[in-house]
Amino acid sequence: MASQDTKCDDMLSERAGLQQPSPECLAPAEIEAKVEGVGVTKAHMPVSKAFVLAMFAGAFIAFGGLFFTVVLSDTTLSWAPQRVVGGLCFCLGLVLVLLCGAELFTGNALMVCALRSRLIMPEELLRSWVVVWLGNLAGALVVVALVYLAGTYSLNGGAVATSMVSIAAGKVTLGWGEIFFRGVLCNVFVCLAVWIGFAGKSVVDKVVGVLLPISGFVVCGFEHCVANMFFLPMGALMASLGFGGEVAGANALNAAGVLYNLSASTLGNIVGGTLIVAMGYWFVYHRDGSGAKKEDER
Image 1: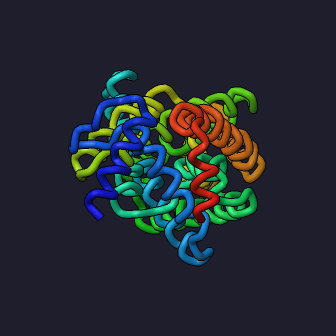
Image 2: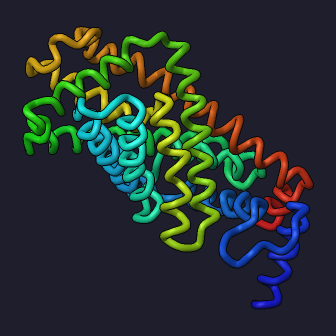
């Protein structure tokens, strides 16, 4: 078994065109192979289990969104420090997803590597994506309800509620194309963070690895569909309770506004994660045809 593992390591290193990787982390070619294996597992997971794990991911990202919102309610911070601190706080969501185990729609864009290597079928990929997207939405909505029942929005003299409205209004008043391209950029960052998470072999590796990519997309104002499953309903709920009446665009916080944003951000996230990150790395590290060989062995 040990000799087989050594041969596998040598093969992966040769595919990458790199020297033997250090034991502290996986080399890029090894990450790509791992992504394919994980993609197969995700595609074949029972629907009930995938849905529950997706609910966890939706809740985890919502926790990060709540952390971010509370920080933004502090108006004593200037704009840039506020965004940086808030972005780092938002990282809580992906840290929980990677370390606790959950199914996140945006990260699952990397499953396209397994599809391109013919290890899974298109219908398996689409089924997984639909189940996980819906599960993420359900988990985020559960957190919205819990935050409301807990009265968390009343923190900082109600400033947290106003921030919830302001964040959500800013997302539904953007142009559809602008949301789409912000979604593309967002999932490039997110999938690279997940890629780094696959590379790490310790808790510290994974946590440190996701901090900059995730905080980076938050600071830049990119659009993450799962995070918006929390931000938008939360903002709409607060607006319906009379908070943030002075916020421009608050009147657009309704079901149509939520669907408007989610349609663009979801499609943008798919494009950024699949065409740029997943297919880019698949082309570099799997163009030798070994994916077809794996399919034959299967």
